[in-house]
Length: 138
Image (cartoon, rainbow, N blue to C red; front, side, top):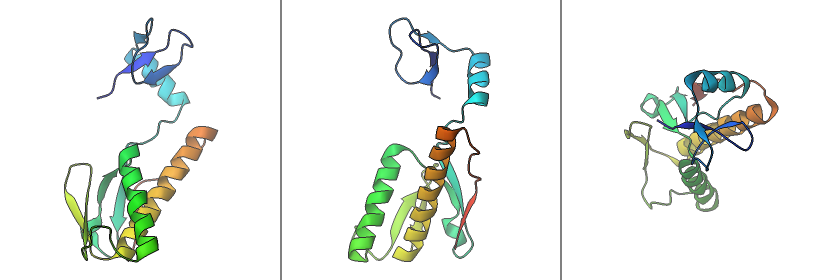
């Protein structure tokens, strides 16, 4: 679980490394801050209507998104998985592997995840409404 801090310089609440003078935020401070500031989700739940075994909750951290977008780009250029195999296993937040049996399945998944992350980012930037989850893919 990440620790929340109160910046001595700005009074803002954030997660990350403490600077000199910062203090650990109380749960009341975090609750009040969270109510006024949407926070980027750490995962998205996907429901696949065509391949139920792909349904799951997937991480959307920076490293995972970078790998996901790299794979989607490779597929767009080469019409194949970068692994050189005919299927691609992808872990959910519990580490359970879900096997994509076609590049079309993976592109639908990557598109849905990217759209969700973009909508969440826009909601944070504009104090708008966060996108709903689960997200449905074919």
